[in-house]
Length: 175
Image (tube, rainbow, N blue to C red; front, side, top):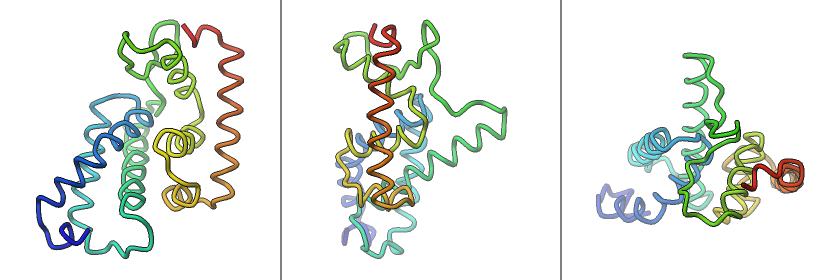
């Protein structure tokens, strides 16, 4: 943190190496395509670089960085909606199911879960990914998304319930 505040590029590089892959994974799951995810991650690091001096340390640095990332994802989805009325949902693959760009060699259960997660409403997907995939605590998720800790817990419960329903009701998702 101090290295970043002092403008040392090595510190930003270390931050990028540590958080970049997690950020890209989350952005990809939220936005649905690699190019948008990479753009949002790059934009996030630019904002972090420009605004590191305003970081007060009231939360973990990762929490602050991921909040910027999530806000950038929201901004991109809004811009795309305004431009062409595109739905900000994931692109559809074969059989009209969301295709989160998973390599064909992945384990079938992983593919089924990723497809089911892609079907969740955006807020449920965000909380699920932050809690279960990225490992953030509900207090951190609340700060990132601007919601209460209790609301984060409730949304995670709803996301898990919805995932169970999707996997039961749509056996084709598991293919």
